[in-house]
Amino acid sequence: MITPRTPIRRRSELATPATNEHMFAKAAASDADLVFLDLEDAVAPAHREAARTTAVTALTDFDWGTTARAVRINGIDTHWAYGDIIEVVTGARDTLDTIIIPKVTAARDVWWVDVLLGQLEKSIGLTRQIRLEVLIEDVAGVAHAEEIATASPRLDALIFGAGDLSVSQHARVDTNFTPRDFYPGDFWHYARMTVLTAARVAGVLAIDAPYPDFADRDGYLEAARNAAALGFDGKWAIHPTQIDLANSVYSPTPEEIDRARRNIEAYRDAEARGFGATSVDGQLVDAAHIKLAEAVLAQVDGDTPDRACPPVRNDR
Image (tube, rainbow, N blue to C red; front, side, top):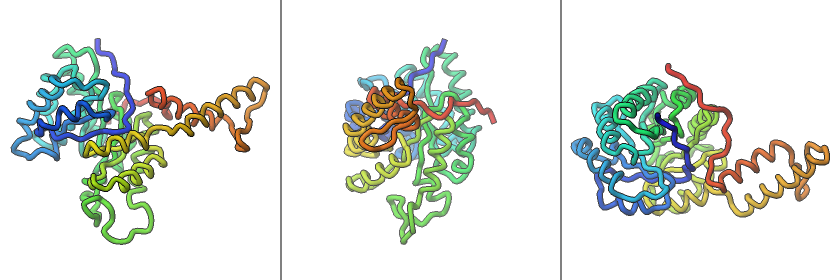
């Protein structure tokens, strides 16, 4: 019988090309919450089939500790996708935690992978369910984000991808996916909020896009903080130097933890005296504030906070 894996936090997700064997040991020893071996964009087309073997070797031969182990397969509209799933899952077995599906445009894309994984797990006798994360990086994906987010109970996260979305919407951006010319506001706000809203409806995590200029520490921090302010749970790292930045931004600060604990203590005391609200440091604390406080403390314990609603199966 297959039992679902318990999702962990996804503050940082480190991208590692599946063909760059010298990077595997460093990736396995990193502090990233998840590391994915990339079979797609980071691998030249001529080497994508061979990359499956090196990915399996990395997953099975290295000690990954508590880091979640993933692969990004090629898009299901390519001739590589089927082989990626079959060969990596069969070779890696229980050393693979998650498959990341790129360029998802509709719920059927997720459903296809879900069904194939179910057959594979039963066929080779896996005892733990392989989880899914999906990239929303196409205008069709943005348009169908909620259907995609609720397409499979395996789904742990939606990932916002600005790079391919730039191409899909014919955006005039630079190599860091920022507008080449002046734009009055946050260029990606609509797409980010669409992905975030769909994730919250489905009860899954929302992960922000990569920041290609890995030498720009301040730029990465600004982008991560902006996404965190909206409610995103984590961000991709394309270089190991970005891991600690993401982990810091997407973890509660000592001040936030202290405030959360004091709010809960004060509210419980008021509740015991028959009141539905109280104040801490001159600010209102009611039931809504307690939900926020509990979400903060859940992150301290290493768990994800409760989401809006449980995932819903959608086989469209």
